[in-house]
Length: 433
Ligand code: AMP
Ligand code: GLY
Image (cartoon, rainbow, N blue to C red):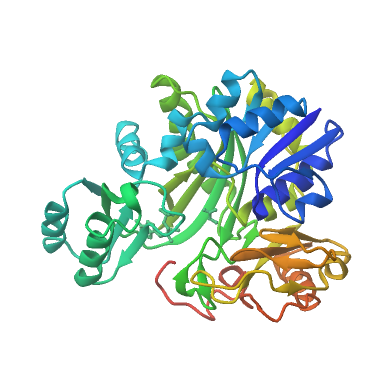
């Protein structure tokens, strides 16, 4: 089977790594891909949002199956366009992708289907939003309705901050039209967990849970990022919680989307807050998490491609997945300055040596090779150094040993990935972030 992976981040490298190992995969392609993916796939310089270009590529390369990694092409309807062109695809339709593409739509869906989530109000009028804030207690959570590259959420600890977030969205148009509507919701304190399930339109199959570190700084301080590290399984998440999540947060999407005429096919990522032992939904994402995907796939022992094909064909009710008993942990290395301004093109050495250690995989998130074949940074989050071990502590030790072998003076990384699981009392900020 000839497979195309759409995207160029660490998540897509992890997908490529797992799919390349499948006995069903004869030939693997990526668009646009990155220098790491080029080790297992033929990369094509076509943007993930270029629908016509991708369809041409599929025809030109006789692609049998497309796996779409990021949210933006899904929200823009890439899965629909491929299906219309007769190409098999893993990923939800644009109608189903509204679960991530519009937070206001998602919250209304939660109301329609009694999904436990924070109380909320939607606004498309700035003055009404500002007036609402005056009558509420802080903290308040202000969310941009549309896609905002992970920057559309403000946890406002005072009213001035809440007002500023409203004005940035609605008057200053910081996120363009995505901020014309905003959601103001109650703050939920608790332990945050990322949970993943596969849905084939009629059945749901639990994957696994992970925790990521969204903040740039150690002790979970500083600005929000796409994720500076992740680990799986999270010790705070047991089978009872998983059963609750499947029943109260995943099944309502399966049934609700089907009832509304848009069956959900793909991976569903539920961003959860565990509040006093009860899982509440913060957000749905319509894709794998990044870097959660890296640790999930490091633990998966079944064939990923077969699972993704089953999502597309139907039949998840007869499908079972095997997971390693081991733990996995991923340390993200980013360019100095990220998530603000950073330089590109800085050389990185030692990656091959670091990756040669047993139980270590280095997933590239934004790399390219120069004319001499030397690896260079090409974005904010650049590498995801991932290791497995008998427990989280062992996985962490191996991951940081690998990080130390990477020679990249302009790279930054957190030294405390996994602290919530391994030293829960050490850095506690108590802000649930
Ligand atoms: P989202 O993009 O909705 O996941 O929000 C980004 C981050 O903001 C989440 O990962 C949480 O850490 C935090 N967050 C979002 N909504 C809430 C909420 N209602 N209460 C507490 N924290 C939240
Ligand atoms: N790591 C969080 C996300 O992928 O949205």
